[in-house]
Image (cartoon, rainbow, N blue to C red; front, side):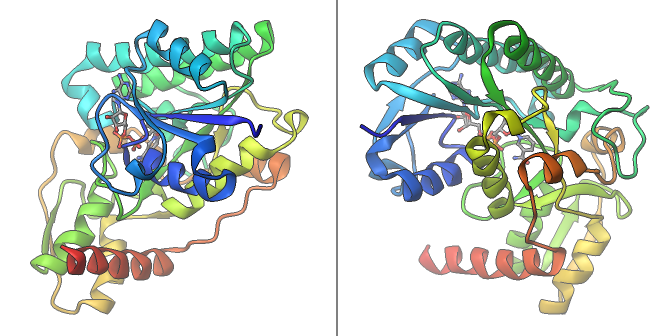
Length: 318
Ligand SMILES: NC(=O)c1ccc[n+]([C@@H]2O[C@H](COP(=O)([O-])OP(=O)(O)OC[C@H]3O[C@@H](n4cnc5c(N)ncnc54)[C@H](O)[C@@H]3O)[C@@H](O)[C@H]2O)c1
């Protein structure tokens, strides 16, 4: 029997695309999607689906044993913008869900775990340009604190209990299939919807705020690559830096304007500006490239082209 995969948080921005990508590779029945809420997308309902609260260890364990799960992708979390509004809930969800999956690994109920970290582990005292893998990390958001603590626990469970946990520090991810989940880089998705709908958008980040970003296809490719890599080539067991592109709202606007000349961008910053100001402008991901062969494909021009075509096709279906 092929080894089975469980995706937790499968209805989210990344989980939904990851589920479909893994089902393409391993077959529909080998990939169990799960989330605290039922799926709304017909594509996700196409294969096995379980309602699962990742903070409930006994239910988690029961699904893992019932389906004979080998590998878990733990994608449930509260993202940066939302966690600033609900700090304790954010901390609780992000840490409890991680401990639950790590403990399933410790009990030898599963063999392999993917858990994403984020560029939010860095803070205002981190070098901002080409931020190295190992550097000062003093995050100032609840989300960043939970991701940094999570990274240390991943490294600890690997060293102390031999748990095969692998992780990537995702930058801001851009996709059109599922709405973003309350992060600080959500502007870079909303802008495409509004550019096509009303030719106007108001950015909640300032014109010159450069942030590391990545197209979803690259992120899914990276996730599957690190999980497929031989265990001894995954040398970093906290989390790997990962870079795609880096741009500001103004640079994105200019690229969209090449396709939609009437498009107008205004700026009205909110609480997310302070979060963005505490994060790096660009990332050095040499270790991921050297250890397990990471390469990104999508530059800004390609992202804009794919996003405009993708969002347009969604509107046509509606
Ligand atoms: N999207 C990004 O740009 C980005 C960047 C860096 C890191 N990440 C990380 O990647 C992971 C996935 O992010 P995303 O953007 O897909 O998030 P999302 O908010 O779009 O999706 C999270 C999913 O988890 C589910 N969920 C919430 N509480 C749950 C619980 N108790 N049990 C089970 N499911 C629960 C939600 O219903 C949702 O479907 C998170 O760990 C996030 O921190 C995302």
